[in-house]
Amino acid sequence: MKTKEFIVTAIIIVVLLLCKFVLPKPIQFSPTISWIVTILLGLVFAFIFYLTIKGKPVERRIVFLLVGISLVVPFFMQFKLPLKISPEVQQVYDKLASLPPGSKVLASFDYDPPSAPELQPMAEAFVKYAFEHDIKIIMMGLWPQGPQQANQAVEAAFEENPALRDQVKYGVDYVNLGFQSGNEFVVLRMGESFKSMFPSDLNYTPYDSIPLLKNVSNFSNIDWSINFSAGKPGTVEWIQVAVDRYNLPMSAGNTAVQAPMVYPYLNAGQLLGLMGGMSGAAEFEKLTNLPGKATTFLLSQTFAHVVVILFIIIGNVAFLRSRKETK
Amino acid sequence: MKREIPIAITFIVGTVFALAYFIPREPFSLFERQFGDWFGIIAAFAIWLGALNLMKISAMKIARKKPDFIYASLIILSFLVMIFFGFYEGYKGLFAEPQFSYRDAGTGFNWLYEYVYSALSATMFALLAFFVASASYRAFRARNLEATLLLIAAFFVMLGRVPVGDMLTTWMPIGYTMSDWANWIMSVPNTAGQRAIMIGIALGLVSTSLRIILGLERSYLGGE
Image 1 (cartoon, one colour):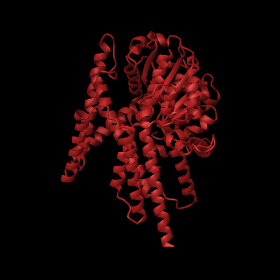
Image 2 (spheres, helix red, strand yellow):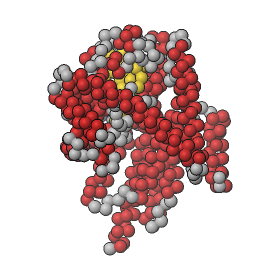
Image 3 (tube, one colour):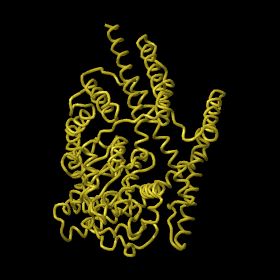
């Protein structure tokens, strides 16, 4: 390791140790400090704008440093941002809220940890809401990591509301069927029989011994379904097989990257609502009145979006200026 | 026979699936179920094949002492550790009372998943933010009409998807704030574009599938 790299690594470790053991928790800036930090960041961007116009674009590492600061610092800020609910997220909530107690919901967790920052908050809000309103959840995954993400959502619900740990019973109020390989073929076979694809749950309990699944044989016994998806197999495959062939009512939560691809299905009425990315998750948390990770992360994402836009503007002003000079 | 048998299997399975979609009755449904189960079995084996192939490539890197062989040894070590906890705790949970899964909270496998695997993969994905910002500063230019339209759309969607967009446009009439513009871009131009792409892909898929089913396209067999 070079000396420079060693020093940087050592500084990061020292700062982390300080944060862990010395600084008081939770670390939160007052609104005044938050504004000062924001203004300072704005001044730094004004300086970068000046340098770029002068024909001295900043180095990549400066860009990386600014993005890093813009992502991390908002975690300690206290800005309250007004959040407008989009029609597609409202549709998801309306569908969920219209379910009577005892309704059975099929939730497919088709994502892995890299997409969890966007999808896990939606999943957690959904699980918490369902548990608090006596909505039964049948969990599964077309991705190997999906069932584990489902378990994490359940644990998060229990941690936030410890009373649920006693009220909600595994096998009666929710069940985790685990992962099954085969992508859309799993969905296709589930259209005729859940048991054929999931002979037992995650804990090896036979399908027929699980009270919640007593009268559940296929999609016709499901009141509503929700799919948390980060790619293939995911929402598109569920729509093409379960919605189109078996008329399963379905809503979805997608990563911001995947959401634009799902809009045609939403506008065609095949999908009953969509939560797209972190903002979709934050809106859902607001609607369910269960503020969680997405509400916290949204400020950070707001800063990141503004930073990217500022970089685009600065880059383009410099580009237009250089083009004018060339002419 | 090395070519004829796979072509015959492809023809039979492809035809059955196509017919079963339009005629969801016996015997097509029966064949569809059967072939669907076979696909699941093949997919399960493919996971193992992928894992073993990764092990083979990593082991070869170590044996030949290639420049990044240290990372290859980390892959093998991580694989073996996860396999060990998965099998050990899976076996233990099978005979425990009450039964539990190796993926349940409190198991070593779950600890590794939550505090090592999740953290590392999220970190890798988070790097994207840095590269997007850097690329937007250096390469996202309004060079022509198409690029300018893309820039404008990106501007509205990125600002409209976060609360600050609406904060900046509170002075606009109701229904014309930044989030409304973002929603319109997603619902109208984006949907139109996506539909065009989907129709194009579907037509391509149908023609390629037909060529494969009829044995005209054989590149998937290797060689030709």
